[in-house]
Image (tube, rainbow over all chains, first blue to last red; front, side, top):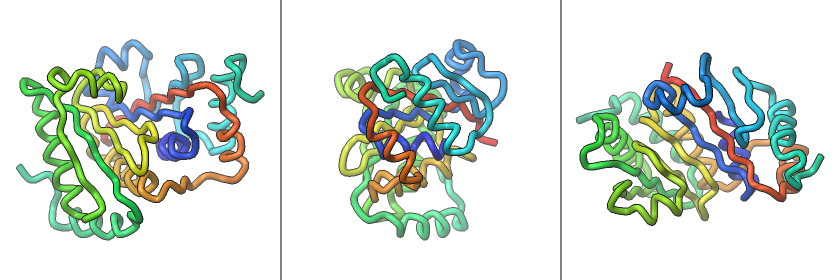
Length: 71
Length: 141
């Protein structure tokens, strides 16, 4: 979560939602949350567990790839 | 209702000494909302009381629909953390436990505007030309 929050401050393009999964069961079900943390980026890239900064960044870039972002 | 113990208060107050510029927390709640809405309001109230750089407002998801839409908030409880501008930081559900640490951290980074990321990451993010919406599902423990 920390990386997502800091990325939101680093770029006007980034929004970071921190969601308490137990409080929103339908929302969690929609994204098939089985383990936490579960990260979903632009509804295109998703993964479970914390990632190091470099890999988190490449997940972000993968999510915008083809959408006009840098490769 | 008391959400923070004296010990918590002390450590949060110390953490919030890192705030350099004003930070505003907007809580979206609902009159007939769940217990967690009320708890979230109380928790945020107790937090902002610990720093003169922190303030809060409480809005209603239904009555303040236009603002909710502008903030992109469609469920409650939600907390928007803003610094010099709206950086796009949202918490859904009561920010307690593990998320509480993130709430305090987000207040600090929104206040300073200085993310703790490598120069390489910041360069890559500066090059983004389309929106990135990151959702992180967590649990309090």
